[in-house]
Image 1 (cartoon, rainbow, N blue to C red):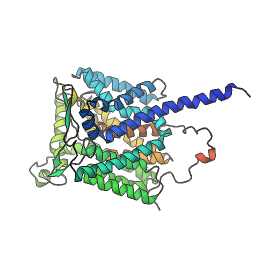
Image 2 (cartoon, rainbow, N blue to C red; image 1 turned 90 degrees about the vertical axis):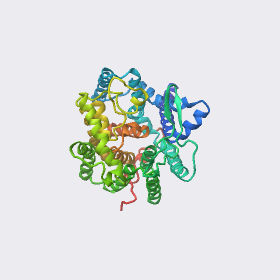
Image 3 (cartoon, rainbow, N blue to C red; image 1 turned 180 degrees about the horizontal axis):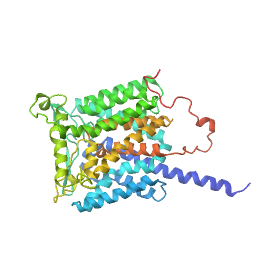
Length: 438
């Protein structure tokens, strides 16, 4: 027996294990930080440790950069990075400072991290599912705690240097409090509850447990009064039994993406009365506000400054300009539509990126694994949410989108761990179980 053989075989898994463990820990840190964002900011700022809120995203960006040296991306991936560099130069040409570019990279770090490190997360998917499950329970409890008690971090803000940061945004709509639970915003907690429960559906075999989880999640999302997420989540649950029908799914994927682009065009081409009862109050008042004010004003600003084709550039749209104001140009901090958000940033190229959701969901739907089916549901839900929300601003959504891209583009199967047989790798049940499947 060759004495060097056991030594070499024992070293290789150890290196891979360490790398995947680091990736897992960073993902867990990001998920925990975002799940308890409001409460953590309150208590960490009280202890003078508010800077601990930021290492998770910084680690995401750092691992993305390190993984680039060994990442085997295709032409599309490297073309995307080249276009991102060009968009950054365009943003600086329009008045963005280096701080705007770096903060935007920091904000999109979870997506880039999930895209290049998704293979490691897929290898540790069950451990990640345990963390996601615990965070889902905490999110459900946090919303109820916010509803029936007075949490100390409600409406809390603090300063980082000369910038005031909202630890928890307290606001109401039609006299109803928008509950955020442990997070910063009601939108954030609603989105993460939807994503966590959809991700966990890949690991739960019991229909009773699935129904209980989906029901509790739907009820809690409704309590947050985030209507767009509630409708998107309900539609996603209806999609699950239709995943077996390939052409039907493809038509649905193309339709929801097309509607996401068409909705702002409705606000640009049609006149709505801002004094109508529907626009003043009611279930659709916030939607009318987008149709009448938000989307037309953003489009007018882009056209006025000649940014309608190439966009304002990277670092010139969204919360980046709130942290690093650009005084030499009129920029938009809110788009309330992800297609408009990407168009304002990257121009027509941003709309092309938004349309890539169609092949992304189609590729995931065609994969036979339960995780891929759960991720296609997550992407479908996020596409519906993107009609009225800036999804790129939600860190957990970026992480799951990046993971979805990684799973969709991965061609080779995950390596079987040492000691496992080929027989044990074959799934014993259908790729995706839904409570509505017969």
